Image (tube, rainbow, N blue to C red; front, top):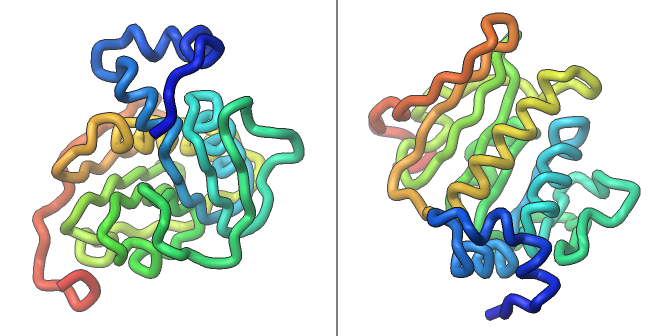
Length: 193
């Protein structure tokens, strides 16, 4: 396990003093591996925010997403496939069940019309049986960056708090509201059993 150097304590002091994170949570972040699937502004936002929070390894499934180093403690690597080593998967590419079936938390982020949807899947239901549909975010719009920020916050919550159940968040830019709630109950599913 990584230890917190004096420089790391200074760099992440605002997070360390938050009781829900603390030194243990920051160590979890520094040791974490997050697989990010997708491209575009939302992916660049999530990678940047996770790196600034101190997530140790960011694996870009669809190639490099940044032109500059993401942060002093984060390592960004382009990977050709999912080897199952990531602690959390963030899916902006609408791959759904293809990445969620390795028994680890999965943050699915998509645009559904003018609403951004972020589903944190922990155990059941999976994206297929929860009925979560959407498209990968298009490059450029402010909604894609907002989607990346909500997804990054969910990844940090999963890495630090390790929730037992998932949740669904919807951000309606035109209405200016973020609503969060429980995922629908699992139904018999051909994907997750």
